[in-house]
Image 1 (cartoon, rainbow, N blue to C red):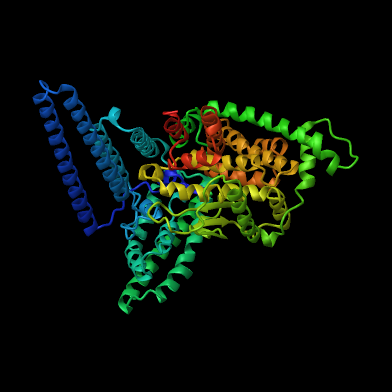
Image 2 (image 1 turned 135 degrees about the vertical axis):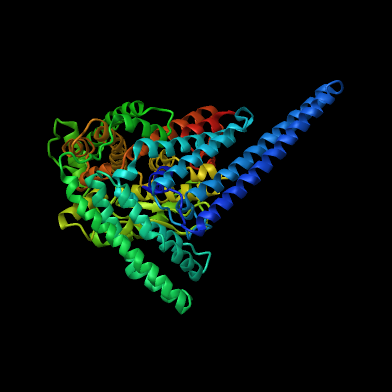
Amino acid sequence: MKKSIPTFLIAVFFVCNLVAQAQDKGTQTIEEKEALNKMSVERSNKEKAIAAQQKQNNADKQSDSEKQNTENGNKNLRMKKDVEETAFDIFKLDFIEMLWRTYPGWATSVGFHKYDSLLVIPDKESRETELRFCKTVETWMQKLNFDSLKPNEKTDYRLVENFLAGVRFNINDFKSYQWDPSSYNIGGSIFDVLDYNRVSLKEKMVALKKKLTYVPEYYKAAEANISNPTKEHTQLAIKQNEGSLYFFDKVLPDSLAYSGLNSIEQRDFKANADKAKLALQGYIAFLKTILTETEKKDARSFRIGKELYEKKFGLDINSQYTAQEMYKKAEERKTFVQGEMFTLVKEKLWSQYMGGKKMPEDKLVAVKEVIDALSIKHCKRDEFLTTIEKQLPELTKFINEKQLIDLDSTKPLMVRKTPEYMAGVAGAGINSPGPYDRLGTTYYNVTPLTNYSAEQAESYLREYNDYVLPILNIHEAIPGHYTQGIYANRSNSMIKTVLGNGATIEGWACYVERMMVEQGFHDSPEMLLFYYKWNLREVCNFILDYNIHCNNWSEKEVRNLLVSEAFQQETEVTEKFKRATLSQVQLTSYFTGLTEIYELREDVRAKLGAKFTLKKFHEKFLSFGSAPVKEIRALLLRNR
């Protein structure tokens, strides 16, 4: 799992959780108005210059129509084309600039630190500002000649269209700002400022000193927004906001001592921090108070229903397939993989690991017994994180020897314990630097097993056994999320990078799992069996998420699917159901993205024939940033 945007998340995370413009009260309102007015004037001047050039082009065309018609006609067409390209370049720059003005927290998270001192106040006024932002951008887009844009530019255009539709959907229809208290948390905003290493600690503390002044109003607005929240999101909000107290108890005091701020500045910083901490504690107390209300029978369910689910799938996943079409593919893949697993068990593994025991007639039971016998091979509980660290160089060596893709060893990757303010959703995940901070550290967050009972820890380790743990590292790190993030930051389109598609990001990580096994990584029947088991998990992610939200599946039904048909451990079932209660649609991104990327690879292979190489395909695919696979398909196949 990757945080983008989406990291997570992906652009969806930013739309849902940063649904407001920073409202820097007092002078900031004036400054923002002046900046936006200046921007409007500059845009107007640019548009006038373009219009004048177009007018001149038309005049030239008319005056030359009687002589050298062909030559001058072609010249005018070229000049007109240059004008359209210039107009789109202006649009892209203006869109990104206005995007960061509207979402300063998002800007900081991708490495753009111009607005680090600002903090989103998620009130009604800010949501109205977002809607005005959408209208303004659409007005700009209407002035562009879409048909004359280059293919890459058309892709950017459609990505912006989809993003704006997503903003409106989240504000007007989805309204998670009302029922998801976990969308309000100051911890990530503080970390993103402190983690930037290109400025001094003093400069970062100056920015935070101002940001902290808005925390009381931030949480006041959060409390005002919340109406009939879900129990699951309220519990998560309490856990993660309690984790954010660590910044006030430890990180900020330690940083202040070495900041270089003078005594008066330190006094003011501490005063702001104390007020912010008090507001944070007040929000936690507020959540604990309303938690009892979420136990009532008429409390809101975490299930969003089929209508919202279909809309959200269309916007978030942005696939060439509908949710129902992908659901059918998932069911078909499940049946195929189960058949392949039984063939491996019957022909190669049963006699080796089960001795003279008679094979059960039920094929799934036979597969499960072999998996259980092999799953006892795993690392020790207190060596989980270090085992992950030790496996990464092996992946790098294999990829280089096979020439599967160029890796950039200059980009730092750090395996660490998942910070408390981010805990509670996934056991492992990547936290990547944004496109403005390409030299920043990528964090491989791993949740330790310290809070698990002995039984829970053993169940977890059997799930992530000696065969599966390398697959997890392929997915999260090399050549999965870590590698994809590096290539995405190199993309020449900032729009494709910042509006990253979750299915592309997760799909790539799932695709390389399959690709690495195909290429012979840890080549053995045991490894192939456990790859299929892992692939079944991705397939069943789709099936369970769709059924939970659209067909009211219970935890019992999810357990039956994951344990009986996908051979998962009990701890994994509990964690997966919990995750599905806290997210919507995201769990479908894995199988959807994998399916589309694999189909695209095979289509490109068929067209290129002997000229096809995996390395060229991988690097070309990643060169388009994190655009939806359907858009990359159009770009890759248009001239083939």
